[in-house]
Length: 240
Ligand code: SF4
Image 1 (cartoon, rainbow, N blue to C red):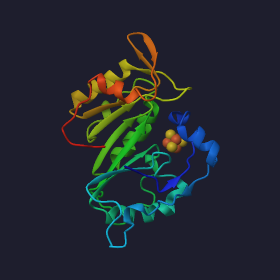
Image 2: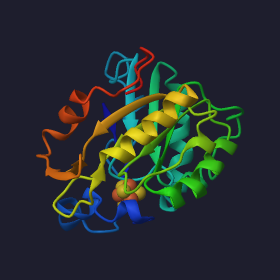
Image 3: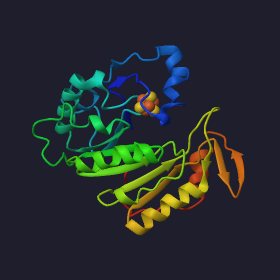
Image 4: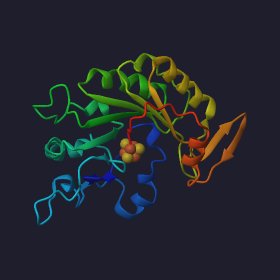
């Protein structure tokens, strides 16, 4: 289940080049218009009986078409943290390319982190990994994962896997997408095996290179094909 408390975004690094927000969505709603959505307080809304509209025991993934740590959302985020704190029965999954802004507007009672918050730091190449991941590991976060998305080159994650629960890898989707090489994916998987970290190959991307040949994969086939390759490593716990 997805929850978008606000919408709009600005490019921050190479991985954003072909972000779908800059495609049809941007044409319709404007490129950099960052505004609250009508679902801003959705997790704490109640019905006439006083029950939450969203039942508990769920995973709520947030900010897939924006970024949780946008500067424009600094004030809104203070309020959103209070919603997250209130709903201890929901696991919130936050994926970001702006982990360096994590400390801004953090609640005063955050301590070692809220138990129900799982933060994913996105990296697309070695330079974003080397900048973002040391910061990511230095912050008080109880549950963390690394999302290599879109994977644009081989990445050495080994210095950063200690203290990380999980790694996901996805290729880039779209007509202008850059190639995703299966060798890079397998290499990251091997790093995870060696570090005892779980691994999920989520998506091949549109142009998937394997055994020296590049195949164009239909968007509806990309996750299925990644799954069929059978390289995921799970510990039985559900993350998404
Ligand atoms: S941070 Fe995410 S949502 Fe924002 S432009 Fe980059 S890829 Fe798109």
